[in-house]
Length: 397
Image 1: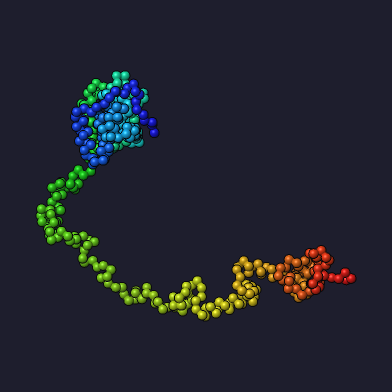
Image 2 (image 1 turned 180 degrees about the horizontal axis):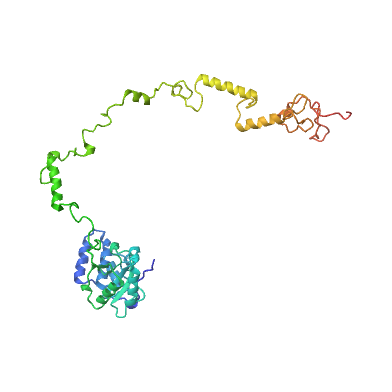
């Protein structure tokens, strides 16, 4: 985004005043706004000042601010915000705005800018040697279908080439800009396709021409109850056309369609009571994901009991979580201690009786024979631990 500042003081005029005609126009424009909202006329007044002098001067900004009773900084904010306001001197005969947006760029706007650099100035916003011409690149000017294009003052020149724009610039330089054709510079009317219309050129493409095409619907309308002039009779205006296949009253809908044979109906029918006693049927209020009836519950309980007895699933006491039940099963298999203090082999081939059983958890506390356990040091440091029978073998033994 470019920084927009006022022109240097060397080129600024000493004062500004609307012409008599523009002064009357300004008063009429201000009166269009309600009391207390007259400052909304700031943009129209700035545009009229630019049209009078060619650009918005500092003196014009001060004059508009005084006329609308606005702080000058507020008018300056408007003038520097909108790029439609020229803040420096432009060509006295033509200021050429070249559209550089995508449609025009694809159609050759770079060639148009090259012509402006060669014939006016290498840089935009600069005057030519005589001060009659200037140029700039702008955004979309609204005639993309006729790209590329330029705007000079309020007029657009479209469908340009480098050669045609060069001729337009020369004409404005000579002071003959009013004679230049405005709009498309090719054989095109406004924005219609080049070469003329390609569709909707006739009433009917069939043989017989436009007259026959007009007579055909009139005859059909008269046969259906309308008048021969082509209009529809008032009594028939709100009724559907029953001559179409989809509105034919002889076609029966689903309600009036004949029923299928009884054999075919029985083949596709389903008895709701059939299979109601199966597990998961709707009669017992469940689904097939689990038993719902009393017989099914009892059978599931018997199966659970059989699995527990065979060792497939062991649960001691209340229900346990899956992880806890699995851990208890491993402990019971590997660290089960019998009444004589010997560890039962896991698979019948390994004897674990000579190993330490202090890590057997709660099962170790249930042992009756503790002769193989040696007494540990006394916590208080006053000798062997007391108050425990069979804490270890005697020294004489």
